Length: 262
Length: 75
Ligand SMILES: Cc1ncc(C[n+]2csc(CCOP(=O)(O)OP(=O)(O)O)c2C)c(N)n1
Ligand code: SF4
Ligand code: SF4
Image: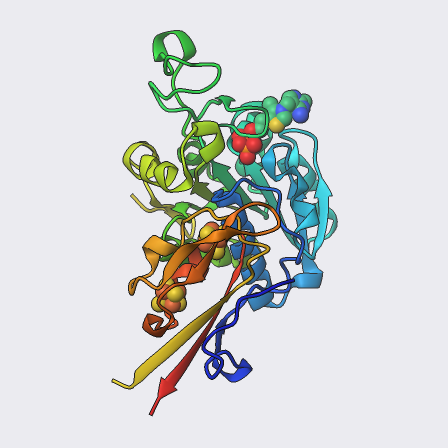
């Protein structure tokens, strides 16, 4: 592995500020350049390292771009059928309540085919954590319209933009989950700037730590980009996300410690 | 305030040349190389290494965890 080294008097172990956590394996992730999935994986891995729960953590991967997440995190992981991760997480957490259990799901997985599993797991107050990566389309299969696609947003199956009269309205799953008595912590974050990354990491940590309280479901939505699917450069897609996704999918806490935040 | 000096090390074979890190650097340290890595990406490098404060911004936004950051207090 070739690396660039400069400033040799500074590049020393005692001056280390940041390096890739070992919970994230060295394998290069298959994601497109600039994709938020990679940053979200890294933050989850960092929290697992900081909480020192690597051997007590079980992750459930979805169907979607992040289907291969189990190749990247050095923890126990289980692959679920499309949308069924919350059902699998329910079983695993009930059988092994001492473990920290999370699902990682895209918006096609969580908000389309897996709507029932998501809503019912939340409503039952299952004591695990959902990480929900919302990029507004089906990334893996070629950028088709998802329930989360914005009004007038172009996708490969709404090439002239989503016409809500014909194609229905976008679904705010995170708001729905926050309404349910079984959810305990519900928040919407992003990972495209240093400040957003710091906030998102705190939210991820809180969402995992909540499992110790046994008070119900924690869900962290991460509004993210899909620059290939949106047909933009990574920088353009982050700007587009700020201008178009954030006004509709407002960042911030929706429910904290079982009480509505807004 | 004590002066600090920083440096980063980029794993250039991991870098996908996404260009997300140069704009978040407050001191304009980073640029994209003219050369390509084995995957064919223009990787990031320190064009102005003396300006680095080791603030960690670049490493925070990197989706591929390519950047290691060092910081030293100058006395
Ligand atoms: C039962 C089933 N139906 C459909 C598919 C096809 N399929 C694969 S990924 C996907 C959507 C993924 O989109 P999303 O969850 O938003 O994740 P992303 O790829 O955007 O991260 C679909 C419909 C499948 N694999 N299995
Ligand atoms: S650590 Fe901060 S100052 Fe140094 S290159 Fe990265 S963003 Fe720039
Ligand atoms: S953010 Fe990471 S992958 Fe993107 S250009 Fe910078 S070092 Fe390379």
